[in-house]
Image: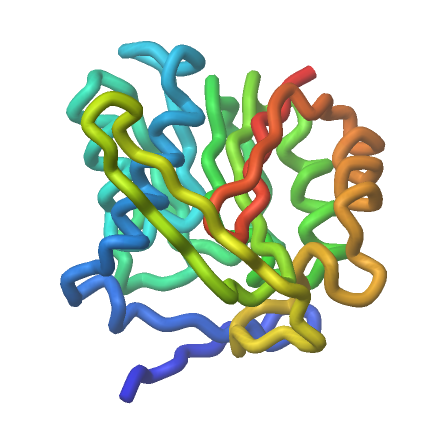
Length: 209
């Protein structure tokens, strides 16, 4: 059974865990890593500086380092051995980076705090790549591999009526957190949505100016 850890900032309790980083990850998780790399392809270059918030198992940061990028990691959990050990809600970002990555991170803090963090990140990077979950449940997924067309996949998701992940404060599509509100709040913090997409129940954004 996984052990949860806690951090309290301004009366809010944040829970997190590290058990999963010591296990072999699922095929779906590897597909998410691949999708993240595809999003960044053509937008990052060797020698660029990157801050990854929430490095998890370290796969993404290690992969980018192998391609010649200079990566700094930040995480609330000491066990993940990030370069910076901090809760991003209270952390003051003093350094600037070419790119900031935050895949499956911001739903772990209250939505209002997430918007505040975006404000602190404005001017600290050229681009932000991030993903957040939709409040949907996968009903069906079909994947085919054909010799000529190669891989074809389709999925069917239906809305959920609650948040089922115990460490999530919010998800897009639950209560008043709509996709339109999310994009509006992003733009009010000085960013432009340069690209957006959906993959396996998650919304992906590339933000710039």
